[in-house]
Image (cartoon, rainbow, N blue to C red):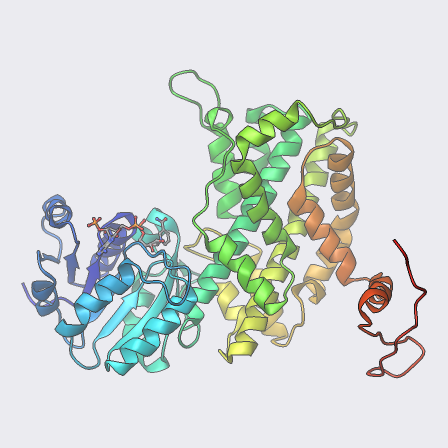
Length: 479
Ligand code: NBP
C-alpha cells in the first residue's frame, strides 16, 4: 500500500470512529494502539479499507507521508500545566522518530494549559503541534464532529483539507475553523463542555418539574419531541425525548426511571469553573450545573437528609398545558443566559491571551457535529456577525426580545419550583444573573460600607467624582 496521508494513535471509541471517518473521505490512514491486539482486531474488522496497521511506533511513523500528520487520541487527564499523562508519554515516544516540520495533533480533551506547554516544548524540537478539541462523541467522530483546532495558522493550513473534509457540515460550511494560537482550541472546547453541562442541567430541571407535577414519562417524551420542532431544536432536546421514550426490555418500565440519580463527570466542567474564577467572569448557570452533578453524586447523604430536613408539599396549580409553556420559556431564557455567560468567559480569556477569537464563527462551528448543536446557534452567529463588539449576548436585539417575552413565565417557574421545594438551581441562577446584570444599582453600597467598617477598605461616593476614595470613622463595636 502507498504511504498514508494521516496517522492516528489510540484506537479506543473516539480514535476508531475518527479513523473510519478520515478513511471514508478518501485518505489512507495509518493506525497504532499501545495494546497491539486492538490494532489487529480493528484492521481485521475493516478489511478492504485504506488502513495501515503497525505494531511498533517506528513502523507506524515510517508508513506516513512527509510532513507526517499524526493525531493522538489517548486518555488525557493532566489537570495542571505541569502534570504528565498519556498524551505526554506518546509525544515523548514520537519525538525521536519524527523529522522537522512533522505535525502532531492532540485530539483528546486535554487541559488547555497542558496544550500550551506541549506547544512550546514541541516548537523547541522543531516539530509542529495542533491542540484540537473534538466534540460529538462516538457518532460525531464517525459521521462528522465539530473540531476546534488551536496552533500556528501555517500548521492549520496544512491540516485544513483533512479537518474540513471530516468535520460535520451545516449549510455546506464545515464545522471547523482555526480557533487561534496555542491552547485556544482546547480552551474553547473546555468552555463548550461547560456550556454542555448547563444545557443538560436545564433540561433535567424541566423534567424534574414535570415529574413533580404528575406528568407521565410518555407525556414528558412527547413534550421534548414537540419542543424539538421549535425554538429549542437541538441534539440534547432530541436525545432527551428519545431517552424518555425508551423502555426497559425486562420490565417495560421507562429506562430513565430505573437509572440511579448519581451523575458522573470527567472534569471539563470543573476546569471551566476554575477558569471563570481566575478571570472574574460570572458563569452561574454552568456553576449550578457542575454543583448539581456534585450534589447528585452524594446520594447517601441526600437520602438520609430527605428524612430529616423539612420542605413544602408540591403545590402546582397551573394546568398541564400552561405549565408546559411556562417551563419551555424558563428553559429557553436560562439557556440564553448560560450561553451569554460562556461566551463572556471566552471573550474575556481571548482578549487576555490576545487569541483574536471570533465568537460568531465559534458559535457557527457548534451548529453541527457537537453535543450542543442547536437551532439557536444561528442566532448567536448572526448576533456577533452583526456586532462583533457585542458586550453581552443578552444585549443583542433578538435575544433581548426573547428574554423580554419569556421572563414572566421564567419567573413563575422559578417561583413555583421554590414554593414547591423542587430544586431548580440552574433556572434560579440564570434568573439571578439576569436581574443582577440589569440592575443599575446593586446592594454593593452596603457591602462597601461593611468592608470599610471592618477593614478600612474605603469606598467611592455617588455624589463625588469616580476614582476618589473615602473612609468613615465607624463607631466601635464591642463583643
Ligand atoms: P480513552 O480516553 O478511554 O483512552 C483510551 C486510549 O488511550 C486507548 O487507545 C489506550 O490504549 C490509550 N492509552 C492510555 Br489509556 N494510556 C496510554 C499510554 N500511556 N500510551 C499510549 N496509549 C495509551 O479513549 P476515548 O474515549 O476514545 O477518548 C480519547 C480522547 O478523546 C480522550 O482525551 C477523551 O477525553 C476525548 N474525547 C472523548 C469523547 C467520548 O465521547 N468518548 C468525546 C470527545 C473527546 P490501550 O488500548 O493500550 O489501553
